[in-house]
Length: 344
Image (tube, rainbow, N blue to C red; front, side):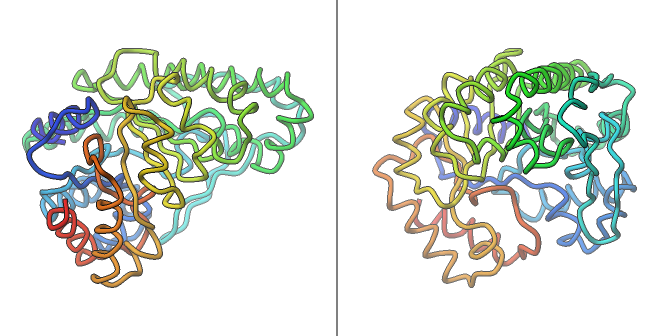
């Protein structure tokens, strides 16, 4: 992300006016390898291909802010790898992490990983170290520390169904489990910031938050998310949850979030009302059915409708309701950006 893009992002998050309506997208390995016409495995295993794919996206769509920008990741295997999950790779699809917990009591023996040595985390950091000069020579900086959220990681390690049942039947043990995971996340974002001094943002992704009720959210998610987002001063504190977001939305300010990427099922006016004036929004057209599979005319209509639904477009970065999905074409992204400029 360039200095100008970062400055624009911070202004939008702070509720300040910017000269032009802004488009932005969360991009990573579900989209970039296919769009760049390489295998997913090549994208993960070649630092040069990883760098060039990200650079091509930036150069093809200079009007868009790509978040977090040069994301060093291995799909959903990233954090589970540090806890010892078996990782299953495919040439042209996302990898899968096997669960390590097979009965509830197993959570009591889960120890906090060392973020400097365990799993794929050293490879993630080293990729950025090796490419840092190239990134900066291109006018960009590493701006975000990134992690999946506590409930999300718990569901990978335990299984989603098993975790959802255990938060009802074994609540105390789940708190112990989430405490260990949260301490790991705090170490992980701290280490990223330690290694890259331009980091001034935190990005946490946790879709499991969308599948629990309000009381469960207040007890099992809000305290841990609040610790993470308040762990150090950051100008942009972005939370991604593209599962149902109505339960968490009113509590995001309390959690320390100031930018929310949410699911397309919720309208912009509805979400604006729920999050309040201190939380900016990143959204919000359907990612798969419209941005990926829709026509130029359908994209334009959805963007127009979203923009015209708001009386005040401050505090908004126009995007899709979630990260960039697979198979989104250059033409469709251009149609989206053009529509934002046309109607914004």
